[in-house]
Image 1: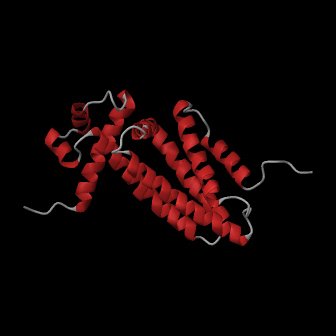
Image 2 (image 1 turned 30 degrees about the horizontal axis):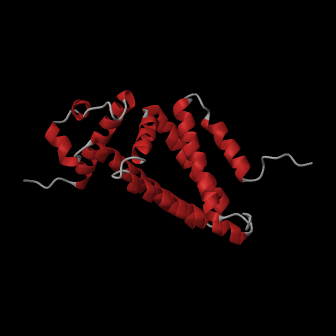
Image 3 (image 1 turned 180 degrees about the vertical axis):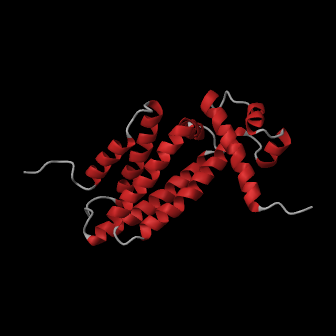
Length: 202
């Protein structure tokens, strides 16, 4: 029997995750059945269970995928010589991703997944691990900015990173409830606050 490639396996896993997300976006996490995911993915139950044993496993896989996709972006930004433009580009990347997620209904699904993680010990560890990794990289960027004299030394680096992450997660929630929200305008205000341009000085 010919060996199945990693690319094929990854593609099939993503096919199942995408199908599940479409179902979750329509009906909600708890209301969706595995049978509905089979039908949406156009796969047999056996094919689904070869990759995922439950809906929770699918959500967990999506958390890990987001972590694996996002961490290298944070790491590259943390290695840049000038931290302020690097942070701005990082926000660009995640805000753009948020808009594409909203267009697919994935924002509603991820919010459901985060809520489920608060009460489901299977889901909370990978989510917390990804948040900690992102925060560690942001803190490195802030410390570099402080060493260069462009970020206030009195500010705690972890707290600055938490505020940056909060701007993203707060927007995520707002966009889910207000699809018409203009991400570009939101980003302009966040960058204005971050760059110290928010207040008019005379």
